[in-house]
Length: 383
Ligand SMILES: Cc1ncc(COP(=O)(O)O)c(C=O)c1O
Image: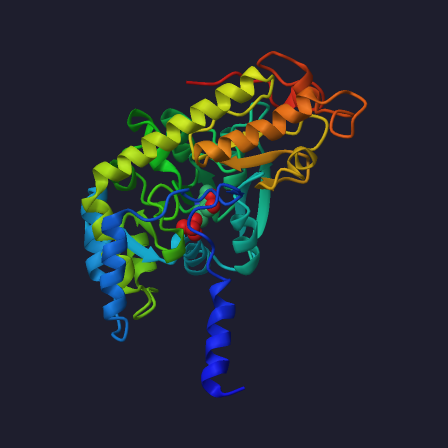
């Protein structure tokens, strides 16, 4: 093979590594189902034209953009490759191997992995009977820990702790324990239920808020996340900013996204409405979902594992070992595929392979699951 032909075939092969922007079956990673907004796309095309050039040595322009948008000072902001990259940097710079990290169980699967990479000992605190974080138990466990992670909304359940409950935890946690408040899905939360972060980091110098452009902003492929914290902690994180580490494309895409805020808000409202529709239809079929404030729904284990119900659907959803499933809210066609997989199981004759062992919750036309899940997930929606 000539070297040109070799290069062509390598490029063709790599092409398969580019996921399709629109894919109604991709419901496992809580991505935005829509491709970038036209203005963001145009900004990225501009960037490609100068891709031979390095970006800024340190991403000061992006820092300013984010600070202004979040209504904090630049000294309160650090930037990284996704919220994941920021979380990893927090654990590596602010904690020492061997120290403890308090995580709810289950949580975003990244956290146990990051804890392991940073050499920290995870202390798991099970969710309470209603699928919410057990903040009292977490505050107690935080007394001997270096870091405690609160995802608000939580992943995988989508549940939202009240502002008062989070503040109670903060008042209870030792001042030298870092509270990582993960707000990866905050844009899907009603404005009145969002925490006043500028005030929070002023009052609690041990809090680090993590946010991402991967979810509501629909830029998961660009890997942009940030941390907001009091100047001392944010400064520590900023001091570990890798030189030339954030592409100029990221800065341009964020600037264009902020300018197109109204269009983004429409997209977010659409996803929130679709979440409501999916939950309502599932409820009408007797299927219980937790009170999600994010861009996904969570169906607790209810007898037969949900993985079996979705196995032949063609959908990629996030299955859990206990039989639960988390499903990203996508387009209406995704919703229809989810509902049709569930309804086919419900309507299958009892002696058919699909109908043999429907999950217990499917047999009830009520708001509450029955079977093993009943004791763990009995709660109606909270606010
Ligand atoms: C709670 C939570 N935090 C952080 C992340 C990581 O997001 P990013 O793409 O910014 O690394 C995710 C991704 O699913 C998440 O669910």
